[in-house]
Length: 127
View 1 (cartoon, helix red, strand yellow):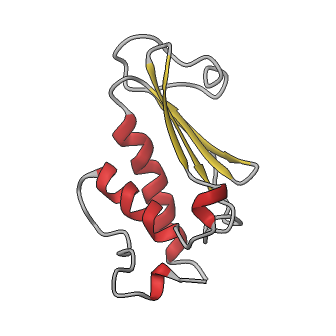
View 2 (cartoon, one colour; view 1 turned 120 degrees about the vertical axis):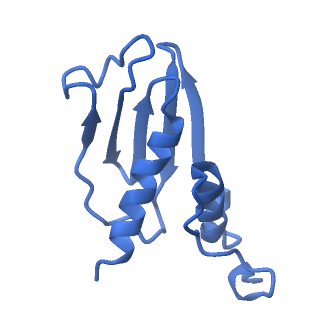
View 3 (cartoon, rainbow, N blue to C red; view 1 turned 90 degrees about the vertical axis):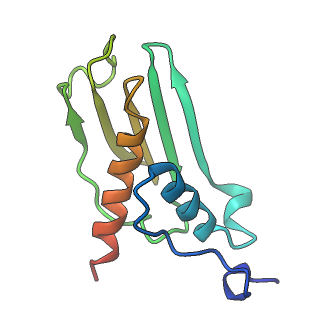
């Protein structure tokens, strides 16, 4: 089977790009191996609060078994299931069933990607 990672057109490793979306697209492409992308992937959706949700399938990635402590920004854990209205910058993130799941306000999609990016960077430095 063709292994895209070993060709001259291989996916770049995610870089230190300041743009969160560029970083996420690079991370996604670095997972693609002619198998992973057929069963797993990344989902970005809107919420009706309004806001955003980000789900990243971790199965068969280096993050699949890495610990992640849920985080909450401008909200309590009890509020996490409800979301918040308005422009208040809120978000929360967790990992369950080998999926990174993050939710945030209408201006916080870059923050959701940033939480995932920071976790990936910290995990890359662990044994």
